[in-house]
Image (cartoon, rainbow, N blue to C red; front, side, top):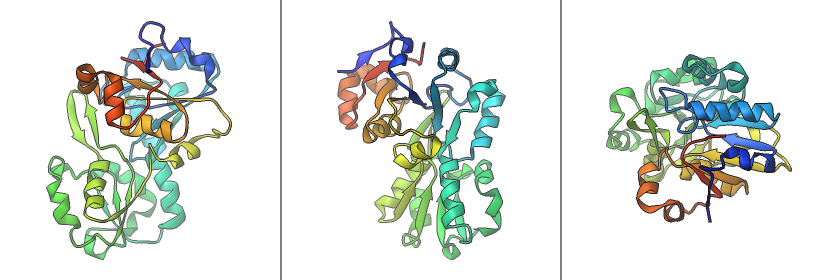
Length: 272
């Protein structure tokens, strides 16, 4: 049974945990503004000297996301806790594929992910050795069929996907993410290496998490909550995020079951 914390707040269970993994987009901000109650909660966790990681499926290095959060008005003490799926992918790319030619699928704003090896980027997918997917092209950001045509003759290449999220809400607008493009590639028979939640590597790279009692907080059942389930962490779903309408209509128990996920706690917004 999922316990509702709307009345008691996160403070009622915080002392049970030594480490918190907290999602950014949908929990701490909506892509446009910070959620002030969530910021207050993070300040309280800081006061308690508890460890936390702002773990985000962002296809960009840590420094790029910290810079974005600074523009939103987040103080340094909090944004220093950021770790991104892009950073995890970058560590892998530098170690394994630094001298291989790649074709980039995603918007120009993600170029900072491969700044150090941009000379390996090709404009011709046919000649590339692997595909690096960080999102959708700006001029093809709503039509997934475009990518089917693009990949048709390139299915034997490996794809590195730096954001497993399928969708995100930017303010009030719903957008496709890199995970949706990777799913197209996989359904066509291609092999995808994912970096980000729910895959364990991003959790393990971000901090020493061995033998700690952990709570994972997020708004996405497919990534935040499934990641917690796979790693045997407790989980708190924020219901005003990506699954807002589903949860309102059917309730968390039915919705979680439909995604084969287990939530220990639920809150409408992250609140201390």
